[in-house]
Length: 96
Image (cartoon, rainbow, N blue to C red; front, top):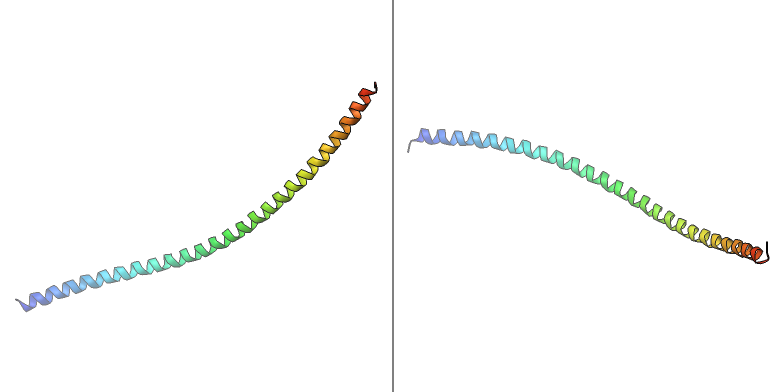
């Protein structure tokens, strides 16, 4: 085997592998930056989700309060309707 050809072969492969390693390092650095951005975005999204959860809980409590108030209003309105109905029927029954 020719020593010079072997050395030339090794040098060429070494140069190619060195270039590929540099490309891989650059790609890895890009991925690390993207990962840090994603981590930041995930943390921000988690914060927003927490805030939205609190808002939804507040809205649910408000709806429960409105439901209870509506029931009370309905009860009072039904009582008023009954009174007015009795008055109207009572007057009509008396010949008015």
